[in-house]
Amino acid sequence: MTLEQLDLAVNKSAKQVNQSHQIYLSLYQAVSGTEEKRNIYKQFSPEFFGLIVIDECHRGSTDEDSAWLEILRHFRSVTHVGLTATPKETADLFLVLIQHILKVNGRAAIVLPDGTLFGEGVKTRINKQLLTECNLHTIAHLPNGVFASYTGIKTNLLFFTKGQPTQSIWYYEHPYPAGARSYNKTKPIRIKEFDTEKAWWGS
Image (tube, rainbow, N blue to C red; front, side, top):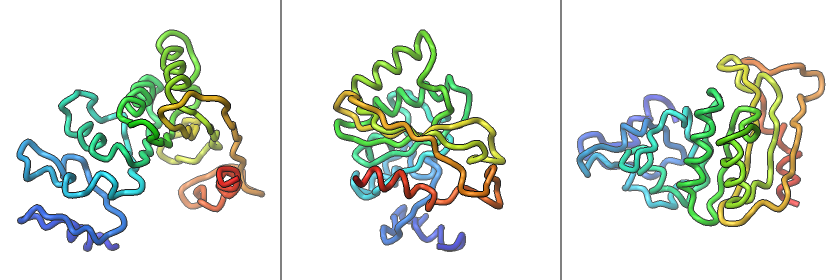
């Protein structure tokens, strides 16, 4: 789909969505509003999408009446992938939010700064809640430079399912490909490099 074709996904005058596309990109403000006719996201069934990727997810409001939260609740049966590489305090809040909006048996895959699950005080309570209420079955530690040049923060991929406690965690140190020492814009991480993880999940 080209940039020119992106506008065709929504008929602006009729506020009707063309549901024939496979990928949709949007700001949450563009598909919601105080008037019901502006809540375009409701034209999609809760199971329409197979995956929802939330960029800069820490910026969303956690207020009970926020449009951002209402959209995520509408699609709560779908796998959500939240992206954030901000200071760990906002990552803590996002982790709590995802646990809250997931329904039982809902699955989540989250990119979080390295060290989010460790610490004292509130971090201890967040960690205990995650391990008690969710099955945190996989943590993949990503190499430096995966999100270059946006941030140099080390990150982990967390995969968990809500509704059952954690029994064991598979921790994987994701390596650089042979001959590589870092990633950058011209040499980014590639999906083929995750063949080891996919083989393990399928076993």
